[in-house]
Length: 196
Figure 1 (cartoon, one colour):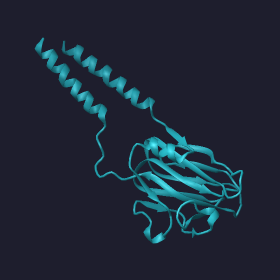
Figure 2 (figure 1 turned 120 degrees about the horizontal axis):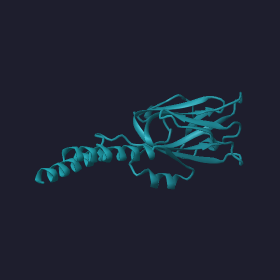
Figure 3 (figure 1 turned 90 degrees about the vertical axis):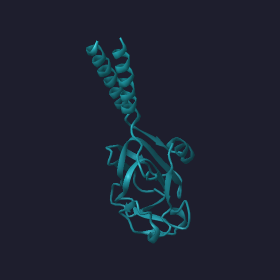
Figure 4 (figure 1 turned 45 degrees about the horizontal axis):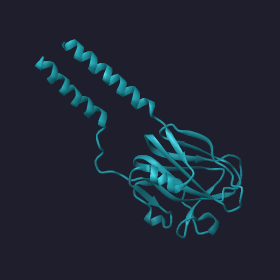
């Protein structure tokens, strides 16, 4: 009887483990409203309008804040990045969702990569219309702590990076539900087997 219970619990744990792995991945969004609806958590926001007021949970690899209207999608300023450079943002906490506006990408495509191992070649492509703004959003099942946009070529053209939304820091992370469910089921099964 006890061996049967152990076997049942092992099978249950294995199925749960495989189910968790099967859902690992990410979803890309090109619409901000759809991204915010799907994020399912509180989002922090940075508009890059004042370097002195940059969110404490961000470190950025750029220091050029420009007010050029074609680079800005929110507020008065945006980051100005050379299209041939690599631009990186580091977070002080785990992030599962991030989204931003890219303005006036006119010279080279940008690859996206992050610390969770997601790589998207040519995630952001040259805009068809001069001064066009593009939204890029990503929701991941795996936490990330940084992401980069990697340009190519030797162009000295610039693009505007603005309106970054990302998963806000949570004071205490919630425990995963499947271990709690496994413990509860184990207790129920143990009690049932003891009665028989």
